[in-house]
Length: 102
Image (cartoon, rainbow, N blue to C red; front, top):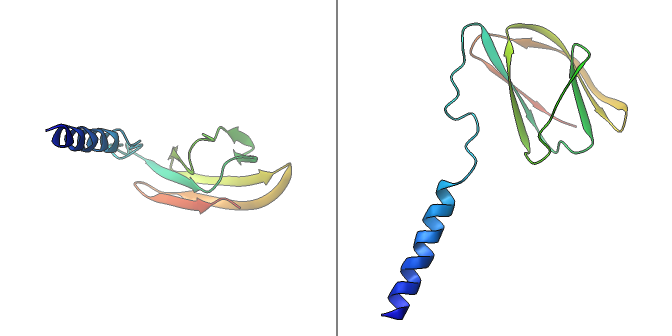
């Protein structure tokens, strides 16, 4: 009986922990003329800017997602003050642009 209770408890804990996984942006609905920028990679030590404006990265996540109005942006990623990536970014309606951070 004790063995059955122990196995049931462990199973319940596993199921509950699986439900608590961070599901960011899964239910996000892209509005009007917006698209998404998805930055993938280790954010620690990185500084990302769009059109010269630094955007904050969540250092606890390996993927940072931003909703941006459609248009063209100058994307720059710096590591320890040195530019590692500089490119034009085209955001279109309903599309997700994925950039791997150097």
